[in-house]
Each structure stands twice: as C-alpha cells, then as structure tokens.
Amino acid sequence: MTVLAYLGAALAEIAGCFAFWAWLRLDKSPLWLVPGVASLCLFAYLLTLVDAEHAGRTYAAYGGVYILSALAWLWWAESMKPDRWDLLGASICLLGAGVILWGPRPA
Image 1 (cartoon, rainbow, N blue to C red):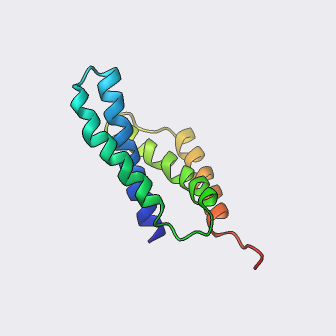
Image 2: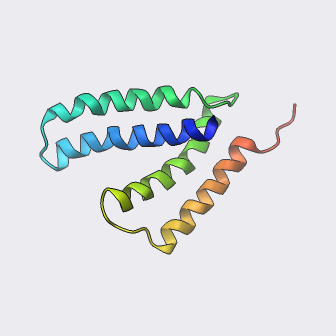
C-alpha cells in the first residue's frame, strides 16, 4: 500500500504542479488551475495513507519517490531521456528514502 500511495501521490503532485506551469509558463488558460488544485489535494490525501508513525518521515521518504517520478515525467512528457547521472542520483535518493521509512527503530 505504501508504494502505491507514494506513486499515486507523485503522479498527482506532478500533474498539479504542471497545471500551474502550463498556465504561467506555457500561456494556457487559467482553467488549467481547476484540475491542478484538485490534483494537489489528491496528492496531500494520498500521503496520509502511508503507513508511518510520523508525517516528517513520510514526507522525507516521499522525496526519493518524487525525484524518480520527476525523471519519468522528464522522459515521458518532455521527451528528454534521463542520463546516467540522473538515474544514479535517483537510485541514491530511493535508497535513502527506504532507509528513512523502513530503517529499524528502537521500540
């Protein structure tokens, strides 16, 4: 469930932020903000579904998933293939996210 919540949150956040990008940088209609805001609300909700005791750890670990998702967006939506340094950086971040979320904690 955690992985699905993170992936859904990343998609919702990127889509919501892109709606603002489209409006402000690509001269799209302000109506783009309606689904953008809804998407950002969905993003916030999905992060609450992550099975973690503290919000800060949930958000910190989400950062790694977001980085990987942003690189997927770069490739899919912007037709710019991530290079080896992008992929190495994302791998390091995902490893760190896993340590933050699932590292052993004293009881």
